[in-house]
Length: 360
Image (cartoon, rainbow, N blue to C red):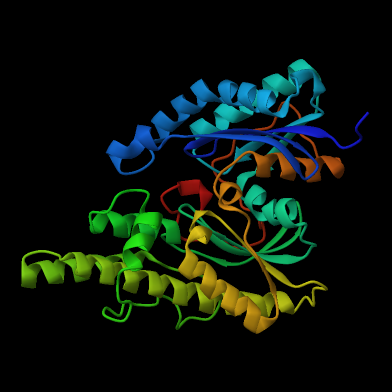
């Protein structure tokens, strides 16, 4: 009999419905059903549509994950589920299914913080040792965290308004580029001159690791309107140069704030200092190169999980659940779906909320 628990993970906090089977760090299956086609006409995620899609797809995801892993429900040792933060309708769908499965199977139920799932992903993919520095950077959240355990996090700073991924999406929308905005803006930026337009680097004049990208988005809008007023429209080169300038501004802000976060993290004198980056924005090659440079200069190992595990998925939830299970940290049927759930309970609330609301 295998002594490593077989864990089913469920994720439904925003617009991806996911299920995965893990045994330790071995991902047996990972199924993710996106909803881009359902929300494309609205320019963003519609909570009611997302919740309905989760309710319709979660059982299908579970069946597919079981089939791909070649296991049955009876073989499960535990059920882990995102219990927050996120869009409450979607979170509730996942929690209710997890409760039903755990009760029917007589197996432990484990509620997982969605952000903890992201933060622990480098341990799943690279076996990082505690403590390490984590930068969560995506459409819905952006935080610097010192990760010391599955429920032990210290937030050094985060976005007070728009998250970087949200700023990419809004920039794409301003310039008439397709969604999701991250890949679209990055592709345009590769054809542009980042020095033509000098956009602001928000909060670099303020101490600490907090970030802000709302003003940068506004600067993009004003530059677009200025060019249109003078020329009567935007050329393809104008669009590429704006994207390049915007991306360079985001890179410079993240690099400087990361330097500050590293300085605070190194005060703990970790034996194996490392920075891990997770979230969809980590796929941007320019931003990633900038962060790698900062780590090299500071003597830290740089880790970025593969993109399929950076964006929302259930493998990270199953893995986080496994770490909690090993510590005997399980839940009962009183587990509640939570729209907000800070990782660092001692940190002051961040001012902004981002497009995914509670995820920030």
